[in-house]
Image (cartoon, rainbow, N blue to C red; front, side, top):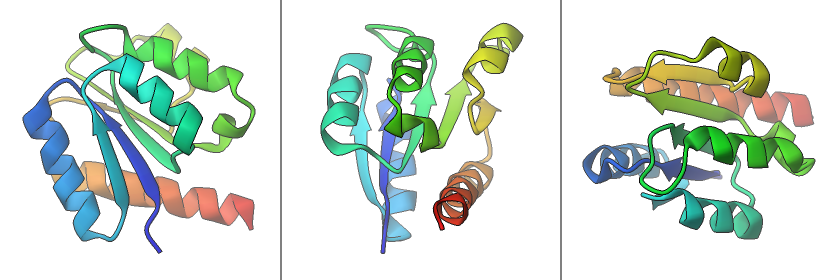
Length: 126
């Protein structure tokens, strides 16, 4: 059965491409182009994995990651951070995302990373 995956990226073409690829694998994908909408969804739907861009129009993706850290149940949700920015070593060390993937990236690599994160989460839950 497919998992709930949240994509948060202000690049609507990239977000839709990721959506299509993950949906073809049977996942229930939700895409938001802003942080506020994404945070609301996180509280309402509790996604199984999150692909999060850092540069968003209304807030930093790091802010969303910090919100996730404060939610006990969300600590188990794999967070895959994407950005055109070089990784901020301090933020990465503090937030500890499942992966940090710098843009532009290979779509196959991103999809593989999402699938691995879901498999690892299931293994831990078992």
